[in-house]
Length: 148
Image 1 (spheres, rainbow, N blue to C red):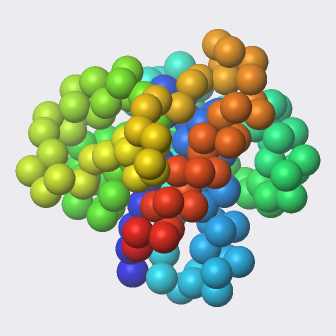
Image 2 (cartoon, rainbow, N blue to C red):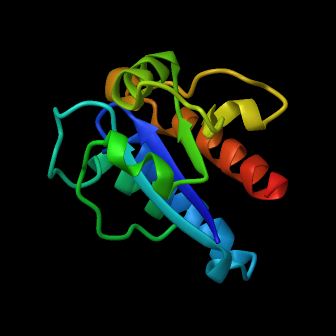
């Protein structure tokens, strides 16, 4: 079982989008039994909130199911629960390092670093561009799944 945790700032936009996209890509590949996928935040700002309406709209528009989810924060105690902790941008990397206080097993990576065009996934909370975020998340999840 490969265990993947997607991380963003609030766990209502990018990381939930990545969670639902990856779950569906895995399902379409017939590999559901091989993966455990979840998402979390580095902040406490959105704790308990559902996915952002822009994320829900974009995923439904693209034919991806949206599961039940409430924002939660990453905890240091769960480091051992995951094989891959995949974040969206440099700010998330800082937040993860603050929470985990290290990555001794090399589990932490940036989503787009799995692709041929490394970089940050822009936060649609600020940009309002859920289309661009979806394109990046899809590319990252496809590359991650291909690598696994």
